[in-house]
Amino acid sequence: MFDINTAINTAIAAAVAEATKPLVGRIATLEAQLAAQATPAPQLDAAAVSAYLDNAESFWHRIECFVQTRTADAVDAALDAHLDKDSHFDEDEIDTKIEEAIENHEENRTHGDNDDIEEIVQKLLNSASISISISV
Image 1 (tube, rainbow, N blue to C red):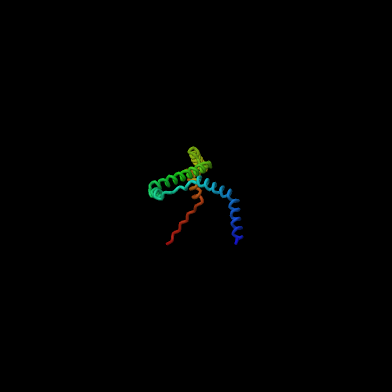
Image 2 (tube, helix red, strand yellow; image 1 turned 60 degrees about the vertical axis):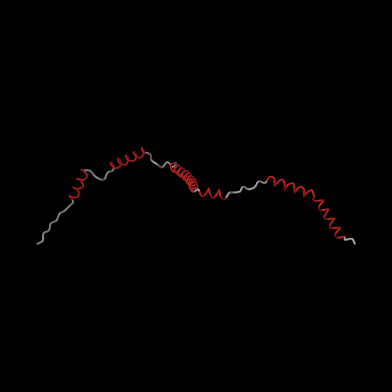
């Protein structure tokens, strides 16, 4: 007896295989090209990394250099920004300000000189009164 289902399934499988043969070939070629181009990922040697990190002097020196560089850059930038404001006096300006303050003090002095002190004492004594009482 002839099995029609087997014959149809075999014919369909053969037709699909024949129709997809060019696609399967192109896929195989692309996979081969991709495998040839792929570079293996670099493998880290755990012992070398550990030895590098265990070398504390080198490790801490690198951190110190990094921090010093960053800190110096930040301080320089802050100083430049601060000095750009032009709110600082130079030595000549300081000397001028001191001289102006001394002159202003001498012109508007309220501490008095000898003549002023004598006038002040006379005014106080002219209006002064003395009372003496004796009780027995």
